[in-house]
Length: 179
Image (cartoon, rainbow, N blue to C red; front, side, top):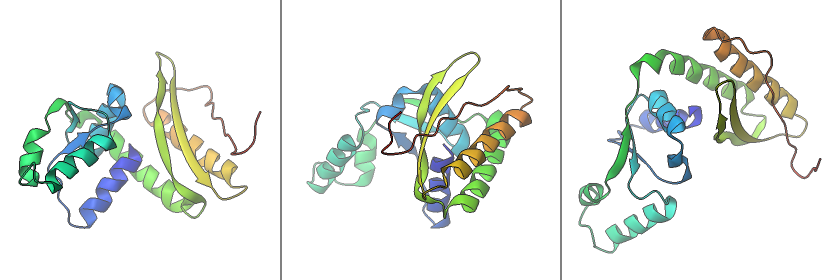
């Protein structure tokens, strides 16, 4: 969600004002993730009735280009949200601090990354654990520095919330190597 928020920052810095956020695709199945995004960007996040993703968006734009809709406003009216996740102001301070930390880590490490890191999703959200899958391509031999920085980011957030964690399990997989 930090990367998504970073994209929203770039959009705003370029003078574009977004009226609404509508999500489609596989990520719409994860309610915790969608609430996290709404809290992180501090605006409502809607999930469209049709969630099949980019193919749906492509088809909608083709119908606009083909004349089935006369304007973006008419197309916007046709796409209905199935659910809207409202941002929770109680979480804003926490997420602003996380965004700031992410921004600083990104700036410190951006030369190491071959490709911007992405959160693939929360694979498990248990009573005593959270499994988050991240992916990032880094310069050769820099994976351990990146792993350390991400470990410190996670630890600092738990410490700030007064949550004691005995250790963090982070697995680094190197492309092309099998275990």
